[in-house]
Length: 400
Ligand code: RFL
Ligand code: PHB
Image (cartoon, rainbow, N blue to C red):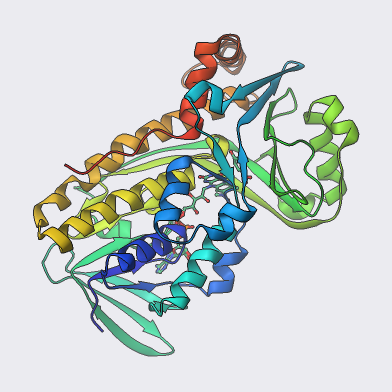
């Protein structure tokens, strides 16, 4: 088999990149480890920045999102019996976010890829990348017991945090920055009316909670839990009881509850791999960086990486400018680090760190610093604007 760009991973990064490249007439093949249904079963992000919304429109896969997605002009932060609304549009000069689930984005991209007749190999095992430093890289994998070789010009490693692509960068070349947080998020999806018409991020003495949604009839809630908790130990009733204790009292009093459709625990991590490219192999999305979900940035950073690689590949194939590929890592990392910093900051401000020392500061002192930080940034318009600008997403950088 031969293609121009071999894409490893059919998550949102791989599928969106494939769709955009195909629109420019750039041939690509996606190799995915699991089945399409398995990919769709993962319940993850819900908030899309304007930049990602525009990119989905450019890829020609935004029709259902524009019909069913909800434009949100604000989010709330609740703490110390206060509720502060961050008016995203007013504070940023008109920017908003779109509430539309990652599952739906992925489904739309899969449908578009199938309709365009583009190749995706699902359930490929033992995927390996070869000769990525040369002009003739290739990928090998096994499919139904057969060994397959895919020759290409470039490889896009869109295979998530546990993928193989990042491992092809030698240890002496890459630096991996990591912070693991001492808690996780227990998420529950249910067919119930959302408890409020905007997202509410809540900081309480019992820990963090988030009220989010997927549609007017489907809610997504999260609560901070110790890393030692197991999802089987949390009945739906126990979840709703704990959530109600953390949400603002008036919201909790009137909220609708019901059986869960999905329930899972996600650990929280900040992670960046530098550089994000090695020879003709580029890391995209979670393969290169992870953020804790508190800022809703993970999928959105993946989208900005895709936008950069798409622009670079278009230059390569349309203008014959092969040299521009060297810009990829630097352009991506500038935006990635802003997203990392915002997610880390929001996580520090909104969570309860218990007795764990943070950044060399004892937990009580750290908690007072964070309380002051939260008050300072929410008590005045400039502070709220700083939050709003980052929540809607910083602009995408152009390729020089
Ligand atoms: P993915 O989605 O992990 O997809 C990678 C794909 O690669 C496949 N793969 C391989 N394929 C071939 N060979 C191999 N060896 C392979 N190894 C792996 C995998 O099977 C998979 O299909 O990465 P991608 O595409 O970069 O997308 C990233 C996003 O999924 C992620 O950043 C977001 O979900 C993060 N995130 C959020 N991001 C936001 O922007 N806004 C949010 O509101 C938001 N909420 C969240 C989140 C993530 C969460 N969890 C569970 C971590 C909420 C949660 C709870
Ligand atoms: C979600 O709806 O899954 C969601 C929303 C906002 C976040 C994280 C997750 O910050």
